[in-house]
Length: 483
Length: 95
Image (cartoon, rainbow over all chains, first blue to last red; front, side, top):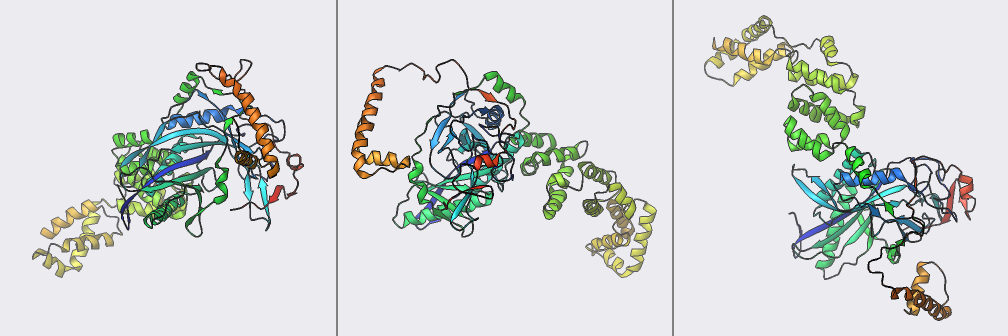
């Protein structure tokens, strides 16, 4: 357990997360308007989404399937009977005056998420529930000094609200939770997880307590839109609360905002009285009844998820938990790795993918899908090392050229003349030349200065531009020096 | 069940209905009467009766995931008291 040191001793942070994940679908949850991001304002709005009188919601069956698929991916209970409720509040981007949501009877019940922590260990966090609801429209406050502009394109888009148990104790764990949840959603194809575009948003509940004490009063930090901000907001908020309590104050349960320029949380007072949502079942919608066989059919179509893939990579390829984590975090990375590893040394393949390739991609700011080096070509490079055409050292030079040009490794080796010298005659003559030019050092070596061996190896490699097979150089050099 | 003045004022506020103070007593009486009328339903024992969600035996109708609606911005905006550049325009609402 990691605690925060206060004036009065150790404090423990208690964190629960509510993630709003936009469902991948063509049309909205209760209307036939499009969901595409970045369209002209109010161009993807039906009369249902704008809450014109008399318009009735009709549920999109694909959104139901996506919620069930996500529930299954979180190893959660699927509720065959669930109910849509109205959550009543007034805001300019909510034309209905209520959000259609699920309250007491959500579509998905208890599940779990396994966190992969930086030290390679794992920890399971409970998922309380997942429910379907409508997204609100978007308010733009920066278009006019005295006015707010409203775009309803997002109004009515399907969201899954995924609520965790208050099981996390550090900002790192909260970060790992969001990362893992995003990875699972992407594997499932139910949410694109793009936090910048707002298709995944986070509400963070934070409280502090003395270790072992009951839960303290929590504050909710609304709409945090990056993993980094989630972690920063938790750190700040925990210290703020500890300071208040230690000075004899008391925490008010309230909604707060993360200020991304000042790096502080601040109160959103106006939200307070709106907390009386007066939920009631939406009279426009019957309860949602699911067929158990239909749920089973969806279960059969689930892909191999990150946890299973990680376990398989560890057992099948003998990778470390750390490497396996790095590779399975995105499906495209895992697929790339498997294509490279097929029929080759899996550990060597993992080193090349997580080391050179990810390093270069990172530096270039590219995703794996945009890699100039294909899995086939990276595999080809590893084959050239395995059959002694090039040394591991030269391979790095070849890789750099591959990354720049996208060419095949064999072509680069030929063009640049990088083929490893395995001809003993050629290596012998290089060694002879080096020994002749350094007669004094040879004498020193023979009189017991063993450390000079490295110097001779270096000279030979230099003379052969690094192309001499290192094992042969060692062997012949040693024989000659001892000679 | 009888509602006091403060509760009526709160309900009115949540519904964003402006009610002058001198009307609160009258409204409290009316609302209390309605509640008392509805409360008679509590006399029926519904212990083991599932809630009735529809008069006819039907299930929730579903729609295919196809784009069939939208794309008529001018019609959507036509009832807005103020619009600009394709947006609804409202008084500034910001934290």
